[in-house]
Length: 125
Image 1 (cartoon, rainbow, N blue to C red):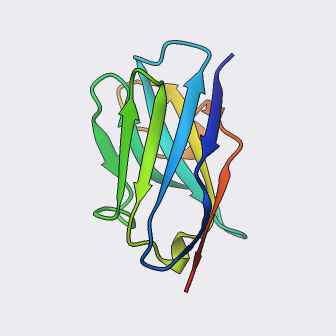
Image 2 (image 1 turned 90 degrees about the vertical axis):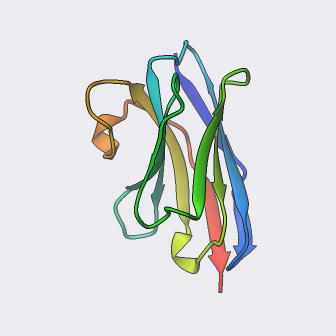
Image 3 (image 1 turned 60 degrees about the vertical axis):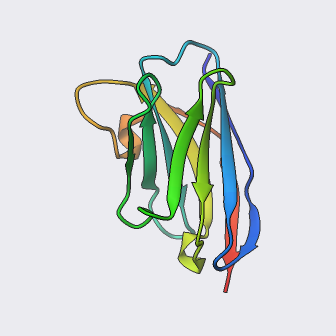
């Protein structure tokens, strides 16, 4: 059974930084893609960043490019999201998710099979 557990959320002032972690367990993730999504109140869940577990290739939403960095630690089975220069509009519940790697690059929630419980990030102005 795949389990994803996020941590690292909190309250930060605009311009500050946070690092989220997602600990994965339950199988070997070599052929999987890990993604971060976020959902603000009243809004749909949106893609933030993704990384292929085997090669470490990364991709980002335009809204976070240059500010957020996704990375993984194979030994710890953990994916990270380093968030810098945070803005109030980054406030949301952040979720990690995973799915088996296929031909395309998954960016929608429907393409991901397993989800964590989420961690709240609040950026004050």
